[in-house]
Image (cartoon, rainbow over all chains, first blue to last red; front, side):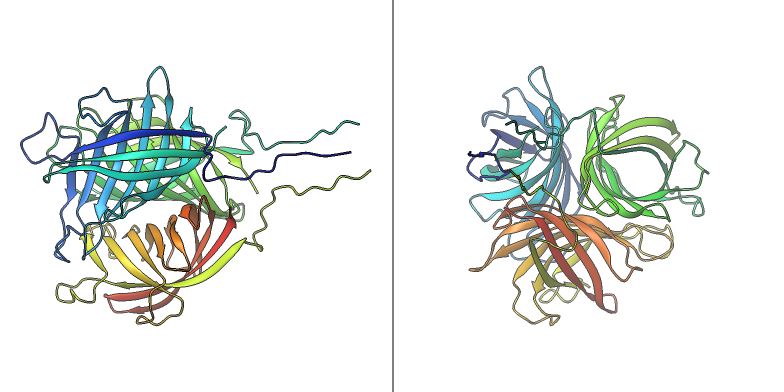
Length: 163
Length: 163
Length: 163
């Protein structure tokens, strides 16, 4: 007699779902109302020279490739702020919102964005709809920085709990 | 010989615990100190006409029916901010605090509040005390909006992990 | 024939990993640039006398004992704000960042800090690297308050999901 059974083991190399999206942040500069998708809600403090305290609220498009004008497949709504006095470093908390024929639902993400690292991992802490109760890792990779008003981040979403 | 066993399967229609509460937000307007339970900590930006960037900190009562003056069964402490330039849309992160003979503990919730939808789902990402390590979904339904200073949201809390 | 098997039961008294760290918050007061590790990004509102609305962004050292000058074993990056009009009470969301030979990875935490309680529990909602996909409880205990510029909190981190 032999009993075989699966035990719940999460394997970092085997997410149950995985996809890569690009996050485009166009910061409001006072004149670009039509294009801007985020705005500085709180100004930087005087501690250090790296915008510590500056908090940005966003409703940014997510695309499957790195072209700003590609049709968005999701929105990212939430905020980030800068938090270090010795380098650029941010902290994010936001929701990916899917509302298409392919996917309906949300994914909630939070964590530190240590911009000096080539990649950095944030936590997927929950989901709803098609992503009901999911958890996982969101790996950020800076794709480009263009002046003060536009940057793009590749987000590699790896889900390890899928229901 | 036949082996039957339960596998951990979450069924969206069968939460292990479920209850509905009403959230009452009375915004401080400069004169209602006695009644106000929330305050605008960050003013809106000039991006769009829907308060984008306005951030509110709250310590709001939660009741079991939709009467503001019913005895609170919990407090909701946290914040929300508006994040869209084309419509009213918010993002919440907060803690439900229970401190009664019936329940002691907290439930932590975050997610997007797409106010144009009749209902919207946020994530219950953790809990403590009687709600030790819980996870689930919090479904928002706007119950009423009364001017700029008061609104009420029905929150249907469905927990799928109970220990 | 007898079948014995373990079921996933979380026991509040048996975390799979546990450690205690001290959080040191030195608030920027306008002159202490060298020492400050946090700054007030949003000023208090006029609702009540307990700093309601004041929001602080931090990049604070975490040490294994309660000496400010002990070598940090991690950083805590995130924010807190005060949220009650009748007493001092805060709400935290932050990331513990480990980057040493012993531990590499992050732990994400959020919840209410009811400062009047001797201890209070927040949720560990996710982790990365060495703390891949972890969940648990972070118990706060105020260690000291020194004027407006320095306070220290003991954080007892108990993880119940370890992979």
